[in-house]
View 1 (spheres, rainbow, N blue to C red):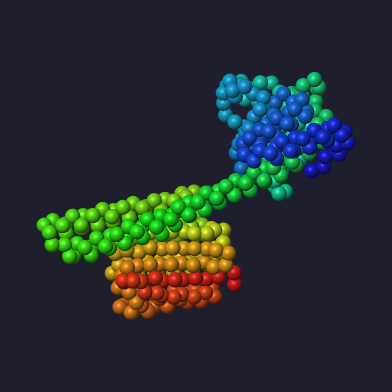
View 2: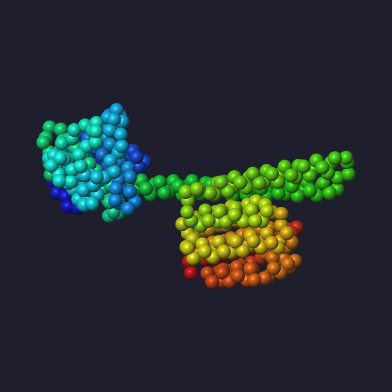
Length: 380
């Protein structure tokens, strides 16, 4: 995108000041308005706008204006989608300067109730060498048209805007990652602390109920155990909701969806907790084997373990993906076809881990049950 060099020190300082201003605000909507305001101020333009392109860069998905009153915007109604002069910058992302918009052959005209506009200057905004959108200016005050100096100034501002937009995107991604990390921590705390304590209290009450001799004591204790079970189910539902984002796509949401699906087959809610950068760290190959292993493990619990409780813990650090599937069923050695025995299912899970240069182990739980630990390295 060729622009003239800015030789005037005052104008160059103005661009630098504007760059610092837009870099200081990392919220994207405010940043875009700052860019328009600075471009208008530099060039004495009456109106300014930024059109953000859609994903396939064929039309405008967003159109932000500065200079129109709220009443004018309401009277105009529908926002432009990228036809006419605006569309010309989409199909040919190069600076465009014209003394009259109507003189441009591609001019499409204005919609009803649109204020008249004469001179025009448009430049593309690029982020990582891809066109993000276009900056439009109209009606240079005191002049019949925008100058080549205006084009150079706005071109330099557009370059700075592209960098600032990329920084804002990265900042937003960091914020999202922080939110996911906090949700993971809350889900982990709920699972590791609250559910485990409730589970222990429930087992204690069951033991006491078996020894109760007074009238109605056993029934009251069983009712208390039932209430605890209901509370555990509610907490597990909260854990699911903390880990699930309806707009997300990746291993995280796939694991949660699979556990929810198989909970219906098993006959009780299976707790799930997720820890670490799961979506960012897992390759498609690891995800495929991980989901197949999880399906096999939970299916075996439902078919063979005779369990009343089960939970899933998936952790990812900088080196290893580790899956832990726990149940309170019959335990190791009681049924060779179960998740705690041998059988073809167990062999398949172990082979999947070994194919990824990992391994699988089984551990007995006290007083009963099994912990299946399946882990593979993130890099081979």
